[in-house]
Amino acid sequence: MAAQFGRRLYKGATTTAVAAVAVAALSASGAPGATLATGSGDQQSAGTTPSPDDTAATGNSPYYTDLPPLNTPNKPGTATDLPITGSAESGIPASILAAYKKAEQTVAGSDAACRLPWQLLAAIGKVESGQARGGRVDANGTTFSPILGPVLDGRGFAMIKDTDNGAYDGDSTHDRAVGPMQFIPSTWATWGQDGNGDGRKDPNNIYDAALAAGRYLCAGSRDLSIATDLDRAVLSYNHSDAYLRTVRSWFDYYRRGTHEIPDGTGVVPPGLGGGTDPSPNPGTPGTPGASPSPTPPPSSKPKPPKPGGSTPTSPKPTPPTPPPSQTIAGVENAGTGTLTATAGDAFAERIKVRATNKLGGSLAKASVTFTIAGDTDAAFAGGKNAVTLLTGADGTVTAPVLQAGETTGKFTVRAVATGRSLPAVIYTATVTARQADAIARTDEKALTAAPGAEFADAVEVKATYKGAVAAGVAVTATMITDAAAPVENDKGPYFKDADGKTVRTLTDLETDADGILKLPKIYADDSAGTYKLRLTTEGGATVVIELKVEAPETPAA
Image 1 (cartoon, helix red, strand yellow):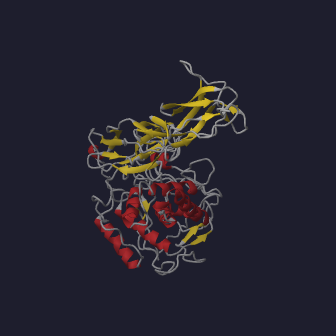
Image 2: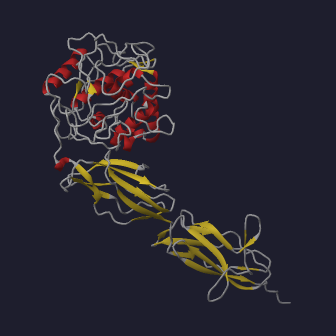
């Protein structure tokens, strides 16, 4: 029998007594792995639960506090292969289970260091929506009706004014958590994903919502195989230590085994509410759109009222409103200089921003996301094009080193308060071509050829930049006239192109890793004389080389 509290917790409403009951229930059920990382407790303390605000993925909406049953699917230490059968609680609807596993694979392909386990998504999906109301989704994974949390109007819940004009939650005055993973619209606007490849980012689609949740949990440099990082990730989803304990218990439960069940037949938490729920087949248990059985589960506690339903007998506590000094108002440039780098080099300047509160002061521990945009192969250290970091005690945070790729030109970097609809700070960065400020021959041999013959010695030059080897520098070679304003010569020495045709200008030449360039063979036509070959590098370095076409001396009789 699952240890059930028969109600949902509200932000700021968790008392020490309730938390103690939760711990006792976990202990009594023998739920394995329920221990938390050091520092987790009921109080909201530094290093444990983040300061309460409206930046959590769910806006700290209510959640279901049912705990796993006494008997886990497998004993601790046994294989985690999915059993064919198991308890009703361990079953996960087919589409929901597929979405969690697909999200795990997708995230592993782009952020393997996060080590996202699909069982964590399953645990969050369980406490947020009862696995999308027991798997009541269509063939594409979209819920038959929206799953909406209560109105976040400050009456028993957080106060979050409308951020999406009602596009996702149908409410143009306040926000509501939306979908099987219960994202608030402002968070979905930043983290929404197209998990099923239909070209849309729909919070009511389990594939989209599961992938968005996975990427949200992996924000920054988290490694979810580390207990403290996993705790921080879950707490970022909902700022509650009791929530963390509940998710942890389901996470450990699912890790010991689960099994697939048909969509629409999953166990729905008692008192499921928070949103519209039209029933295509009313009164038919286990079918999509069916209402939960009217028979209450075995429990000593009565079925709770639905959020937004009848007024409870005892008043709900009003959640604390963060003071202006703890509420982020935006981010601003903190003295970042010009962002310029040569192709392949690291940018010497690093982007630095400052988070401000509503009083204009600095805000510590604020989450800032840096994102690279534009036609560029530049990346942050580690090859990432987006990173999320927390500001320090002085309210500032510095992005990782920016590494230029081989694509030249301009691109932008955006810095924005994570998950907030606030203006971004936009930086323009420029990648220039590799350059050389000097180029010279590597030897001093005279370069001569007889008319109609080829030059015996090859032309070899070396390019440098500020005295160092200049690798990968573009060089142009041109046979020029001996005039005050030289142009390409139409006679004398020449090159051959790939088709064997005569050319007197070569482009797309490039120095090697040692800064060396060896020119192709040079040929002489029938015009005797002294000619000039000019080599010019990207960056303006130039060298002019003399070429002589003369008949060989006739031996004296």
